[in-house]
Image 1 (spheres, rainbow, N blue to C red):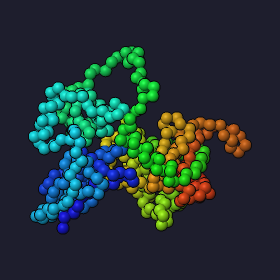
Image 2: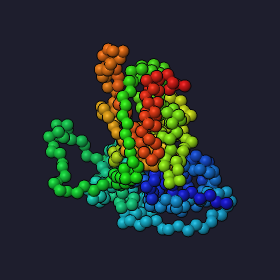
Image 3: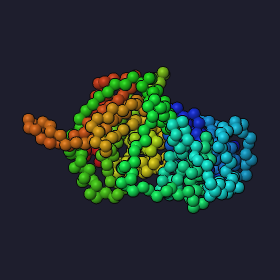
Image 4: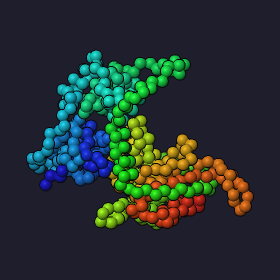
Amino acid sequence: MAIEVTMPQMGADMTEGTLLKWLKQVGDSVQRGDILAEIETDKATVELEAYESGTILKQLASEGDVVPVGDVIALLGEPSEAAPEVDRKPPAETPARRAIEPEAKERAVASTAAAAPAAETDASGRIRVSPVARRMARDAGVDITALSGSGPDGRILRRDIESAIAAGTRKAPPAEPAAARSAAPVARPAAGAIEGLSKMRQAIARRMTLSKQTQPHYYLTLDIDMTAALAFREQLNASATDEQRVSINDLVVKACAIALDRHPKFNAEFSEEGLVHHERENVCIGVALDDGLIAPAILDCQSKSLGRIAAESKDLVNRAREGRLKADELSDGTFTITNLGAFGVETLIGIINPPQAAILGVGSVMPQAVVRDGEVVVRQMMKVALSADHRVSDGAEGARFIKEIQALLEGPAALAL
């Protein structure tokens, strides 16, 4: 019996996704865990993973199609199996939507080599370009203002940049000298002008509004003495590989994973029927992209060593910036850490990432004068702030949870167990 591959829901407010690229074709054998396609959401480009093994019998969506969540995009089955008929609405049509069969790909390269029309822009004048395409263009020196996008609403996609690179044209003009750049006036919006929002910013606005309107927040802040943790980190990194070198945020992730195991309410979510407790501790970490912020998850932190968390954190951040996240890394997070310590920010109070029950804001580690045993000494201090859903927990429970994190970081040997 054929297995349906559907457009996944990667986030509570996701209603549709754009199929950017098929990585497997009809007739290809697929193993569980193989990457089938690349999907673009409002906030990221995600790799669609196969959850069953089989042979691709049929593809029901083409590259560039905008597909509602839950719609079937492909069928898997036995090699000799006939693909059944599946009812599916036609893809949403946009003025710039194009087919991408081989002939169309050749036309795309040819049109890139010719004089290309200006790129499509949104209401704010920003060029419609996916995060992956923007980074590829920057790395390859491609001038995106000269390209015509083949995605929905003229959005420039990865394949458009690949076509431009293959054509060997449309390189960005040489950079101005630094002196000229510094002398150039900074363009500012006119008074009263309305600046349009990117899809990512719209998604962030929806989710944060949902959080503040439906989740009654309470807040707790605490100072953590990181002096011992920094010495512990230095000792670990002295013999660690580059992949396993531990950051301060890795220490915080590990401490939170242990604390979540001991205080499971903060690894739960509210429902009208009661609290839904999660078996897995999937800790999300904030990653800043050109167009906004996303928070993919390090999965199953409850069973991972500090060194493995460090390696997976680096890999997760790199793949987030390259647009190669997996669906469950975006959709299965159970707790979030947001850290602006690298910017020298002292205090960060986060907004809960719905439907999670809490988020931990982390500030910079700073040398401060503190009193120890009646004497003023300099210690490396870090301020953390817990924002928690009052429907799920109360302040006293939040205090015990955040104090657990403090104890683990101030006695860091437990993080290595």
